[in-house]
Image 1: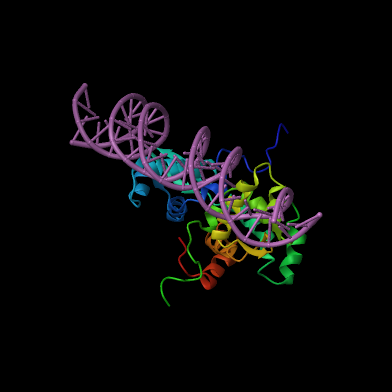
Image 2: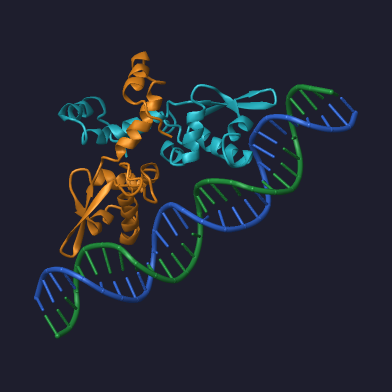
Length: 115
Length: 115
DNA sequence: CATAAGCGAAACCAAAAGGTTTCTCAATAG
DNA sequence: CTATTGAGAAACCTTTTGGTTTCGCTTATG
């Protein structure tokens, strides 16, 4: 129980920032069900391997991808769990476009103050 | 029917970018159920009125707030609808932390390719 | 062993982001 | 009519972001 370690593992980049960039969102999508090395990933984008590599690091800092070294290559894999923070943040606002039931639901299940 | 007007009204800033900044998320939260003028809003933040004003413009470009002029003041109001884009984007990934039913649900109700 | 492949680190760069202060201008209050 | 108030526009500054190219290290492969 040292400090604030409450589930988020706060790094330099958070989930909100990580998904703000379109390229990074595409990378996530690409990694949906196959894990792949940087070179392959960058083959899908109109930019250098190094640039993609940087995006991957940001995603990794936000906990959205996990890297595994296999020989000389590094495989990147989707780690979608942190997206739940987003879902939770959203849940606060959902009541505005949904029905009364959702407002109640919000009270019941998400009564912690996010942001 | 002039151009691409497909619900998003694409401006310089999109929703993902708009909510990436913590200050802007707080502003949204603040506007939850009361609309208020810039001076009042900025009173809640450790920065100049002008800075907050800029954040508000970004939020407005993303469609997340609406401004109404009343005499010499401009009232800002939450407009949560665009957050649905976020919810939709998320729905693609939800199947990974939820059960099989959700995967099915995704197929049934959100079968459009987002990002 | 020599060479090639896979990839991050470093140095560098232009543009965008997030602030600030100053100016201007319209609306309201005395 | 003249302050004063509310607030965006402009100009400016610093840091971050998203890229690039070059370099070097590690792990195969002929």
